[in-house]
Length: 184
Image 1 (cartoon, one colour):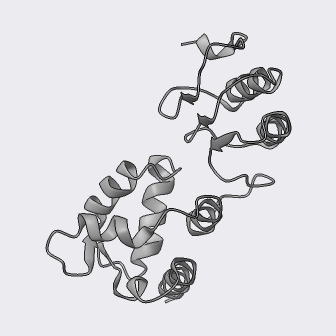
Image 2 (image 1 turned 180 degrees about the vertical axis):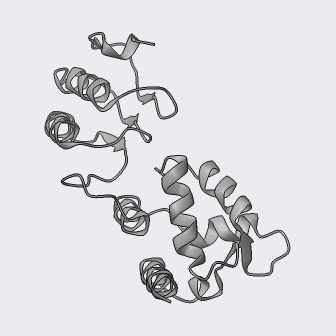
């Protein structure tokens, strides 16, 4: 279990294009060492590093920026960087992630898992859908996100308005509904 504390060495010419450790027990420190190793190797052909489940702290953010300066086309899939120790807001985190992943369409995830075409998806089905879509959240934050998307405590998420509007605007509306229901 201590494998991630050892120095990670990546050598040039191996042809490694994708390196995924998203669902492995890697810490921020281990991810830093990984990115530092890639960043020291300007001739690396690495294109994508997936560290989805790793919390992005200040050190990891710095290592990420350094690696991207050397490997300019490097894509790193990661959780949003949240300064300080404040509790992350899942909708804000999702909006940030969507800003970096412009190809991703939430409505397509909903449609794919809405077998009854009712424009509503249960929380359980949505949890599975988001996991299969590889959204960058651990289980706790995924549950918080879905609770915020539900907003009304119905145990399901209605996505009717998502079809006709911008996904970021829809997320804002979900957050307003959620915050309003918590005050009541």
